[in-house]
Image 1 (tube, helix red, strand yellow):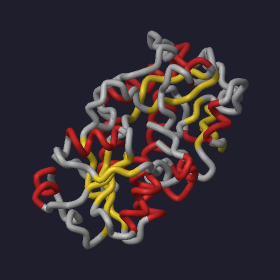
Image 2 (spheres, helix red, strand yellow):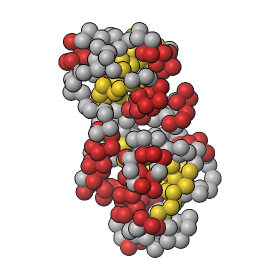
Image 3 (cartoon, rainbow, N blue to C red):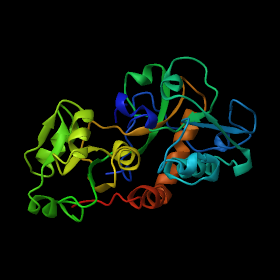
Amino acid sequence: MKKLKIFAPLAIVALLLTSCGSSGDSKSATASADCKAGALSTVTPDVLTIATGEPAYSPWVLNDKPESGEGFEAAVAYAISKELGYKKENVKWVRTTFDGAIAPGPKTFDFNIQQYSITAERAKVVDFSTSYYKSNQSIVSFKGSKIAGAKSIADIKAANAKIGAAVGTTSLDAVENVLGLKPQVFNDNAAGVAALKNGQIDGFVVDLPTAFYLRDAEIKDGIIVGQLENSSSADEGAGLLLAKDNPITACVTNALEAVRKSGELETITNKWLTGAGAPFLK
């Protein structure tokens, strides 16, 4: 997942249902009473402080109100806080910029959930949990296009549509290797989006976070035709971000893994992402 400069409002970034990818600095711990509310060394005693962006966008957080628990990341955050033993009234939300939270130094939060890709470079200055999400590639289009009603990869091929992607991206690889099509290649995402708006192509492939933003904020009558299963072993996914060498990192990771093992993470994913107008194309 990559932060795209042209999509700064979203802090641009198969969903992680079975993978537990993490950076070399991600930590795990044996579950114990030390990993429960009251014993954790949080920034405010007996309170779990969680950070997100300003503003936070759908489907990650609905209506920019993370305290509602509505939206994928808001729901994941509350599932983890519950696993750690915090009641909803003992969870506090704060806001940060994307870049500010990733900078070295003390944090105003216990963990930050804002589609942060786990990378070795970032792990030099911050901690990560294991990943809660992997970004799939997705096809963005518009109502009335050749592929608007496509339900499968076969439908995309049968439409004889022009599908674009930016040069040197995993999106371009997906067009060639997953869809099996010859892509229309653009210098960057901005050029591809402009071509889509002008009707020069029928669909444009980007990662899912970008697709949500394009659909909701950039493209008139925009739609997400569907997402393609992530098969990249190099993509470690998005993790919860914590201060470097944070004593609670292992506990937060344990809680996330418990939420995954119980099946709750899959349920949250299906409700807020797959169910948010981004079906899988097989």
